Image (cartoon, rainbow, N blue to C red; front, side, top):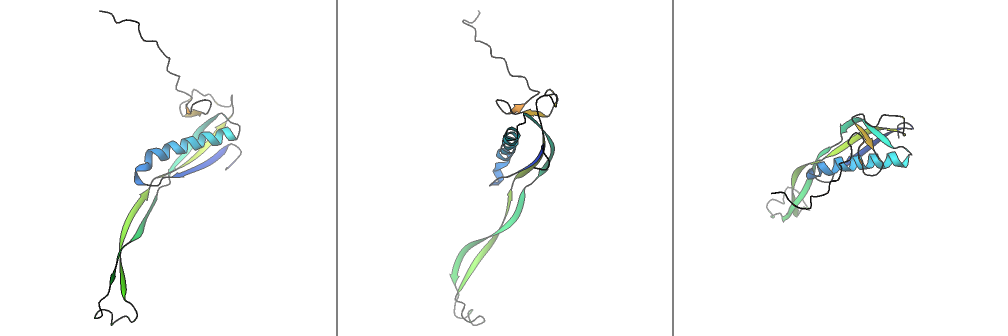
Length: 137
């Protein structure tokens, strides 16, 4: 929490393919925090890339060194061959501001409503229509 009604959320994925899941998880966490603090609506003040990039070293195989190559390093009998592997884990950092009922117009674009299903407050529910009893023609 940065302030009474402002919070920072950070979500990191496990693999490169987690981009959509990271976005969904960040929004769900924003809704959860909003409800836990007694608010109904939130807006996203700032969204930042929180992806992690780096290099891992993978041990590929261990091979026995021949006695001729072992002369330069006494006591070393085995050599581990490693390989560098670059990785990227998608991440998202959100700063949200939360509002009580009546503090913000829920019809403004970008206001998220945490009542019921998590969805934008400015998106009206889809009316349900009954199917016709018989087809014409």
